[in-house]
Image 1 (tube, rainbow, N blue to C red):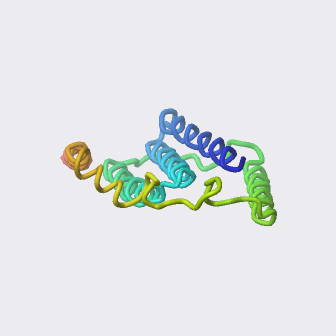
Image 2 (image 1 turned 180 degrees about the horizontal axis):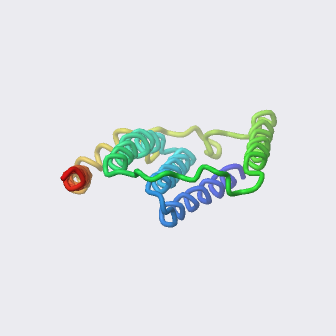
Image 3 (image 1 turned 90 degrees about the vertical axis):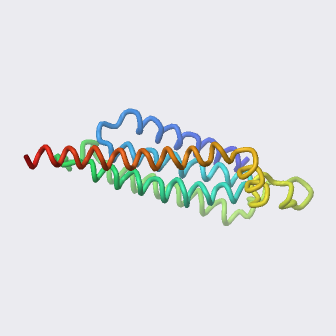
Length: 176
């Protein structure tokens, strides 16, 4: 039952982040929406016992790629002043209330002791049979998917170089 609750919450968080990516007018807010989506997907990987994939998701995508995106966004320039007034009435109170409810639910789950971190019925989980082991991922990644893996690395590098080139030509025009 708890796996279903986690799935629904993380699916909603991933969808909310995806909508934020599309709807945000500010590129930094869009990047933060993407970060929320990536972290929600990482939690879904943990629920499916793919711990290695979840770690890679957080370290590589939510960490390194998002840092690269934010550096490129800042390099291209977001030089306009932002309105820092709170537009949602009682925003801080609602956030504190939601956090309190979340802490109560987590406390109830921990105290009740009815939650198993490994959702396996009857037997212990065999690490070789789960999908997220290092050996299974590396074997699949470096045999069947090596071309896609290298193409993705190349595309990310080209995107960063292109953004730097655009930013440098824009600065040269402004200085002239």
